[in-house]
Each structure stands twice: as structure tokens, then as C-alpha cells.
Image (cartoon, rainbow, N blue to C red):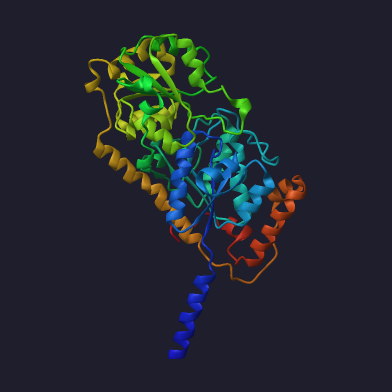
Length: 459
């Protein structure tokens, strides 16, 4: 009995030693230098590492992502690279953002061609994981709008088949239920609420721009929005001379042009609006690259005008009075759930009537009366946001199994095979990764696991 126990202990130790850290493919709109999405990526990378995993990022700009975060990254629009990464992974995870919407198109009926247009490419990534027998989770999502029948059908299939699902607001959960997603859906604040800044990044803006000396600072975070013509004209008219003379504007473009894309320089909305204001205020444009730096800049300002969801979130996280331009439902939902009063929330179609009074309220004599998120409220949101992390941890733990079962051939992979057939020489490495995966996989992977449906969380 003693010998048997010694052998069992040794075998268990050897098994643990041979199990590599779990590889987790993270997907979203990452690498495009959109700082809201980069904020979510920074949070997700930290969560994976804290769970003992290796983050592998599907990126629009892999070189930039590698340099910024020190992670493995691959080009998400290349089918062979995506399939190889997923075949080598233990878990596939969407980790936040407003991915599931059809503002920019959603080619729900063209999934056989990779990459599909709009948000359909995310569905393709998910279905690749399902075919390859890789557990997949969809976390921290803001869902909608979904106007078309095709986008609603595909989105419902993704959320029904995922191993775990969480969204960042009740409106997203309600939309999912309305399109037939009748599973358990965790609702928790956006993962960005759990972000904690880095003290060494505290911004000394006056050293950078001496003209800001003695000024109160308004952070301005706008975005391009071509779906309502004329709103920029109304914004320029409302902003001109709305701020007291002792204020200055610090503009942050969250949709950054990647540093290796010189043709995109100058497209950012900040410089376009500033050139039209023609006022006597000081305007500076922050040109950093990371979400952590943007958070540090916003935190040293005295107020914020935000159109972007995560711009508003970071300003609230810093305890600033915030005026939001509510261009879509996700920004409106944020203001509603935080209890921001109507006088600090401006619908895009009411800029002409409401923006100037809102700005005057948070920058003028009454600014001490403006709504700010209390420290207790911010702390609670940060703690509640960790529900997304807990689902990710459970999924990583469930996927953390050694490849030690008898080998077998890979099953039929209809979409994956079709995409690889059009990938040229790059497909060979992906096919080798697939062969290795199924040669080492146990009987609950591949099409058998896909047919079995989602596993209970933590199992």
C-alpha cells in the first residue's frame, strides 16, 4: 500500500509538471489603437496572467500589441493565423466591448468567406473555436443594436452555445433574451471599472504644455459618427465660448491611428473640431498610445465632455463631473445605471438645446453641485465588475487539462477547412496545429464536445 501511494504521488507530480500553462486566445477590437478596447484588453491580459494563463491576442496590429503588452499576438483577419492560434489554445474568450451590433454591417449570410464584413467576423472566430473543440466564452459584452434578422439569428447562436456569458448592462441582457437566448446571463458592470491606474503614469500636463499653467482642465473625448449628419456643426456652435476663460481643453482621441499608419494621420476628430472652434481658449491634443496613459491624463482634469463609452467611464472612475453626448444606447445605459442627472446627459439630437447649459453647469459657478460618482460607488462598481473575471477564471480552470488521452483523427471541420483552403501556404502550420490538437485530445473534444453544448461554469 505504501509503494502504491508513493507511485501515485510521483505520477501526480509528473503529470502536473508536464501540463503547460493554459493558453487563452483573447479577441475583440484589439490592436486598432482604440483606447476603450485597449483598456478592456489590458484588464483581460491581467486577469489571464493572474489565473496562471498565457494570453494570446487576436490583433489588428500584432506588432503594436506585442510591443505594448508583451504578449503573443496574431493577425485576426488572417484565417490561417487565427485557426492555428485557436487550435493551440485551451480557451477562446471575447473579453468585452460593444462587438455584437450591426451599425457597420453584419454579413450574417456570408460566414463561409473569411473575414466576413462587420461583426460577423467575430461569429466566425467563435465558430472556429467550436469546430476545433476549444471552450469559448463571451464576457463583458454590450449588445446592440441588432436590427436585421440575420445578425439577430447569428448573435443568438453564439450566445446560446458559449460556455459562459456575461454582459455589462441590463439592456444587453434584455436584448439577448428577446432574440431567444434563454440561458443564464451574468450582468455586471463593464470590466473597465476594475481598471486601476499606474502611479508612475500620473500625467504632468503643465510640464508638457506650459500654456495650461493656472487653468482648469476639461477632458474632451469625442468620436467620429457619420450616422447623424450635421451634429459636428451643432457641437462647434454649442462649445464656442461656452467655457470660462480660466479653463482649457485637453482633447483625447480614443480612436488612435496606429503609429505605423502614416496615411491615417490627421483623421482624428479632435484636431478637426479644434480648427473650427476659433475661440480664445487653450486647446491641446494628447497623442499618447495606451489606455493607462489616457486614464492618467483624464484623472488630473477637472471635468469631462465624453462621447465615447470608456471615455465617460474613465472620467467617472476618476470622480470627475461628466457631460455625456449620448450617441447610442450603450452610452445612455451607462448614464442611466449610474444615476447621472438629465442636465449632464445630452442626446446627440439635442446638442443645440442642451450642450451649452450642461458645459456651463460643470465649469461655471455651480460646478460644485454637479454630479460626481462617489468613492464608495466607484469601489462597488469595481468589485462587481470582477464577476466577468470570475467567469473567465472558472473557464480557464475547466480548460486546464493535460493532453494525455489516446489519439484519434480530427473530425470534419467544414468552415475551418473551407477557410484554410483559401489561405495558401500559411494553411500548413494551421493544419499541423489541428493534427496535433486532435492527436492529443480526449473523447470530449472536437465535434463531440461541440454537440454536447455548454458546460456548467466552473466544471
